[in-house]
Image 1 (cartoon, rainbow, N blue to C red):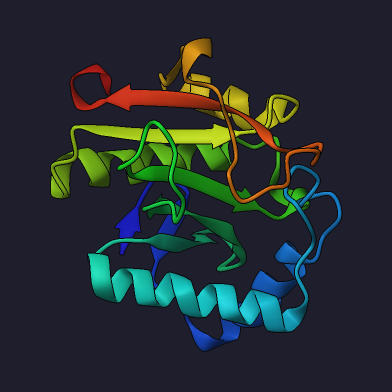
Image 2: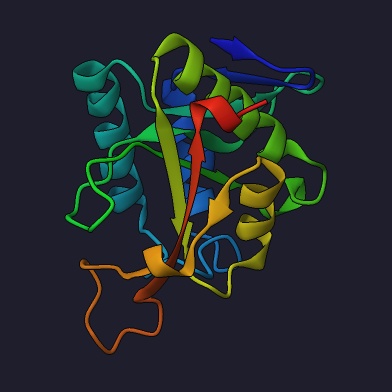
Length: 179
């Protein structure tokens, strides 16, 4: 478990599956993802998250508010499962329920995940990526000190050439630049 001022980043509990599925089924939350997930697809994703922890020793943490004990989403580190010019890499990501947007929770949780990655795991660099229109996530990346070189932008290989979300922007952060 990792703590920040207002949050707990922890391993997953069975009771997280229902709010996790609601998160993944939200049209607003998944606006910049290829699709909303069904409950079965969400459960499969959580099974893959748990498997990543077992095989890699790190992964995506459930995020819980300390003041209410509420599950609000996830953040953490993962190894992307596709080929791209910047691979191999470790990615930081986050997904929070809409009612928890705008309070700095994504930045707070991601900052603790970066500290874990650079400190405990000894990673030299961590990346993050999204579609150009996802200004909220891009703002989090920039608040974290991540930087973008337009030369690194890429077409996501898991999306069809004509898919409107295929183009992605890539942000990077090196351990020596993290504060």
